[in-house]
Figure 1 (cartoon, one colour):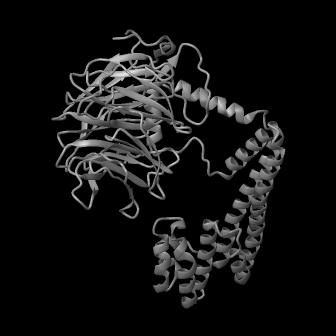
Figure 2 (figure 1 turned 180 degrees about the vertical axis):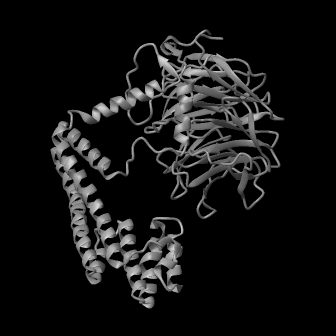
Figure 3 (figure 1 turned 135 degrees about the vertical axis):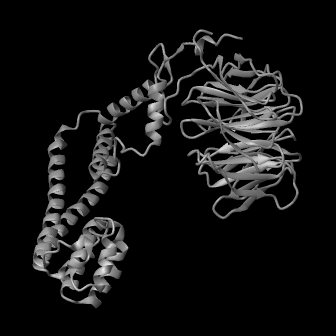
Length: 559
């Protein structure tokens, strides 16, 4: 086994499994958030911090514009407070005409809890005065749309029941009703408590206005980056320098050892994908016509998806980890609901109108609103998940299409074909806007980098090639592996600095992206490696092989 390149070997494994698991569990559990971004106070704090940063960078006009827009909202909130003051006085006086005018103002329309309490009071007074018809109108017009605001379970039901009773106290929810005057006073006290909360909150904010510490945004960003680094599974010997805030921090790690082996398929494993935002699970597609879902930590098979009548060529999973898509030699793509692994369900089967043969590739566009499928019939199709139909078909390849993916902007579909070309398709018009012909063999895969600036292609000419997506110029070529036979050997990116790919010699290859040097060969499979996928959050690589297994690989310091 080759030693890792010195540029990538300065990482040692750090025992943060418990911390990482806790973070994953907390992210998935329905626990109260540490930060409630919907809180008006938090929103105002964010605006102030952004304004401070804009001012420090010399964007004074932009800061003024930001405050102007924020002050419009502030004025609306002040008007809301004024309306609540007027509403409280009108409630005490029983001036329902004035109350209706105040409640219809634009400033109270989102205060549904207040509106419900006020209209409930009006309804109860009408019931008490034996005004059944007016009470019925108030119930339907005002209270029914606000039913979700009821203060106790069954309260709205009891409000309806009051239309048939002789006394308000006959309804269980209103046994303690002690007359209109007392009820109005309680409602006025409730409105007063809302006023005090709003006013005290404003005074507190004004007091803190002078105490916004310098560089607060930069301080928060540094803390966020430090948290991401500490939460990582791997720690650098030297403190890393984070060069971008557009994605979570992920260290450069060269896997050098097998972590786990996943056995259970009854045929070669063609493809793999991670499931869930923290890759707690993995999925694999096989020539045994099944998709299996595995626990990443234990290598236990959690579910088997059956329904295809031929081999699985490709799979993909949405970002939430709730839906899986499988492309098969039976000419279909199946859409699976995998939220409940005890009872996974096939939600839909996408079939071509004609008997067009194997579907080799399935992927999602960036918004996950469309499915991209391609295969033996040389066509690429765009399937709308909302309307449930093919909305665009791309024609032009001379031979079957091995893989088709979207670019990060979603305006292009990029495809690689057995005709040795890579084509770029406009999703709106369906026309081919560019074609690359550089490979000397069939193109077996295409992939874009996270930044959207680079394209990686694999070919049966024994090479993987890197392209600049802006200029469409070839940057470099990666060699050393084997890809010449009747197989779909695929390659992909490992962060920003490495390239990974399978090989017919049974090894997983890792190349330094810039130098093109091989930095690692991972041995352990007993057959062709078709696919290899990296997960930055876990710091692991997963490979799919002709030996009927999946394997995960990680960095082990003792190697």
